[in-house]
Image 1 (cartoon, chains in turn blue, red):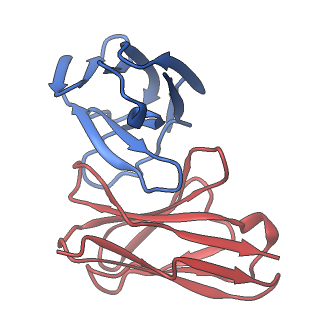
Image 2 (cartoon, one colour; image 1 turned 120 degrees about the vertical axis):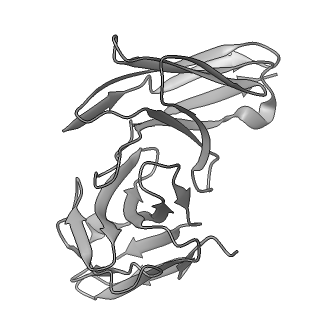
Length: 110
Length: 111
């Protein structure tokens, strides 16, 4: 089975850096994905880690440590538009159900 | 490409009614899935399919049926709607092991 845990809510100020953690227990693990969802919108893909270490995409970075079953999403130079929910999920190979963590709601304050 | 499309965008049903939520994708993705999202909550997997003719249950399959007769289409059927099925329904598709693309969602209210 799969189990992913994230904090339910994080608050930060504009221009700051915030880290959203994800711990997981899953079999057949092939990597960790991150998705962003604005209120009223659909989830959109942000980032993926297939190997241990840091992946950087602009202001967003994601980290994975498979030995610790742990990953995080790092958002730098926070902007008001980053206020959204962020979901971590395992990336399976082939014939697997893809479930998500319960999501972290990020509130960026001025 | 239109990506993943869902119809209808909004729907109100009475308890006991049945209906089908439509989902289509034009990216030739093998993997398709249905999620429901209750207010302020995460995404819960209802059913998924790894290819035409193959479907399987997710976390919360009760009260829903799916079929996958073509690669493009993955309809979700509510057999007898209940107020507990009031939710936003998202369809998603991907290549196996790749990022999922989500449709815009169907907002369903059951009274």
